[in-house]
Image: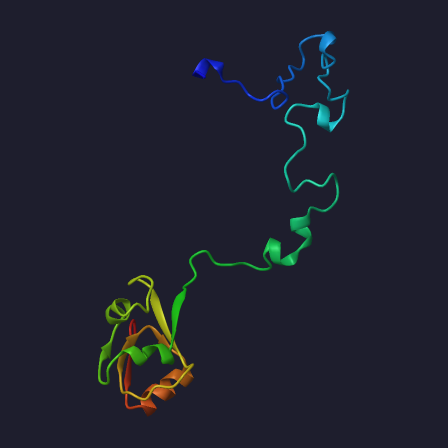
Length: 151
């Protein structure tokens, strides 16, 4: 057997239907689309959200259309709970750089907020952007201190 002998199995392929090539093929003139109407036109159908006069689905759902205004330049904080700060030794000065080295931050440019989940038994000196009230109380109770960046 040679390459020029190869051919697909009988019946596995069929010829492409050439529409709009005269009346004899059965697909001439209107090419099987019928006459008039939305589906007979080129570029038929409209977009996915179109529902032919009904209210589009995405407009009927409040969470899809976005209630209210979301500011494009809003401030987002990376939230770190107290139980994740246990990786540091007692008396360590914890800064964004040391958090990034410990794998607690995605990017060094992230703003950091410390939240109060978990317990902290070692004194740490934290330098962060924000601290919740419960986290501040737990850090100070453990003998640590907090310095806020940008204040």
